[in-house]
Image (tube, rainbow, N blue to C red; front, side, top):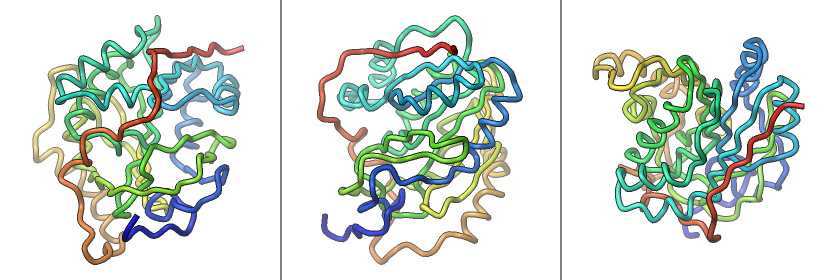
Amino acid sequence: MQGATLSPPRLGAAAAGRDAGDAERLPLFDELYERAAAGGRCVVLDFGPASPAGIALFNALRCRLEILDFPHLMPRLSQARDAEDFRQLLDRLLPPPGPHPASVVLCWDFLNYLPRGAIAALMDILSARCRPGALVHALIAYSSPQMPARPCRFQPAGRGAVQLSPAVTELRESPRYTPKDLLRCMPRHDIERGMMLRTGFQEYILRMVREEGESRSEAAMDDAAAPLMGGLAARIRKPPMGARPLADPAQDIAPGTRPITPRSREVEPG
């Protein structure tokens, strides 16, 4: 790929060339786990595929883990013509909600591969499956102008770290969503915590605080995003010459390579 730097092994433009299985520290994931442990029995919606390490980690909390497996859904979702078509497709592909609303949602890096309208539709649908106050964990490519061409697989390696696979060999332009972009896409959520990682990704914990139909004003979004934006500006280096944020991620959703059948796995605690 012309212009792409395929060295040091990290999540952003630096993700290429990393060894599969390298561990990355995620401080807010560790915090989220501690809070889930303090809250008693819970339901976790995981955007990623099932992994033995993830199942073991949350079984230790007596959590019910619902695996949404978005890598398998992406090829079908990439056929959506617009945000409303995406919403209808997603509604058909997702399994029926479980008997108990979710307390935690693990988005990992998947939101980077969706345009704004699709993020809004996705979070609206998931909000209906969550209890008030549910926490959402997300990793958003921000300071790096490039990111892996496809979502990574995140496998917990203990409480505060994850192993990433496969090794990254291709990059694409990063959408570099700002905190205010996320607030616009998620009108029912507030940003509770944000932390810039050395990988060029911003780690977030968001909380669902609003009922359907409620919205925040532009001034409220500015107030909520300002502290995070100030921290980002202080820590982000200038992008390389010629690099610029996208108005929206390229071409809706990164296409996948495998046909899928709708499926989800629920993992009950032992």
